[in-house]
Length: 247
Image (cartoon, rainbow, N blue to C red; front, side, top):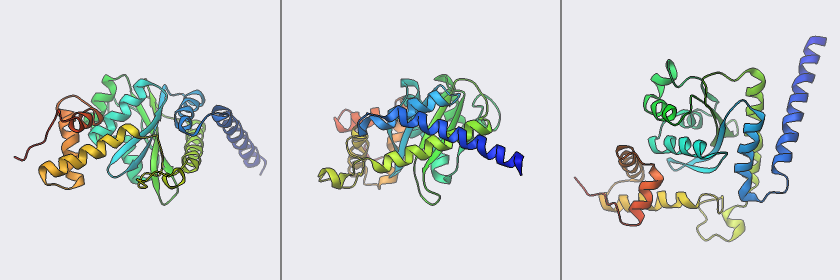
């Protein structure tokens, strides 16, 4: 029993150390800063070069924070494509480790995303689902500039950060608590830019006479064809610089 007890003690120390680092990282910050600050903590605790956090609802991930411009950009690539490790993690509810986006099965699984991610300097992505065993509300996405796997200790730490991220997001002010008349978005003030995505989707629905899923698919396709992000195209639609006409 001693080896098992020693192993349990070691894991307990790992968890305590990571929890203390997370607590220190968010101490004294406002609610809207917590997602980005937790991304910074993840980069400090893990052998990764970037991190981002997104909510997944209504067919389009909503990015809440990132540790760097590169992490934010690669997260937007996944949102634009509607494909990538974060989408797979959100759908499956289990961690998805894309350990080598330069060759092998990860390239075969996400060929377009792999090409665009590596062009942006990202060679591996580790996506941790946020939520419970039955409901996934988003993902913590970890990015690395070299191929490689997470060892057991790092994976446990990544899971812990994701668990803390879930708790933090659930504790953020909800729309009904802040008097937001919209009511449908329970995180207030964090996803302002992405409101334009849904506004643009509504305009595309009216222009083409299609449903929400088709409107978002058209928005993504237009963004991909033009080398833009879905958010950039949404702004153009809302500001009437781009219009979708029926074929």
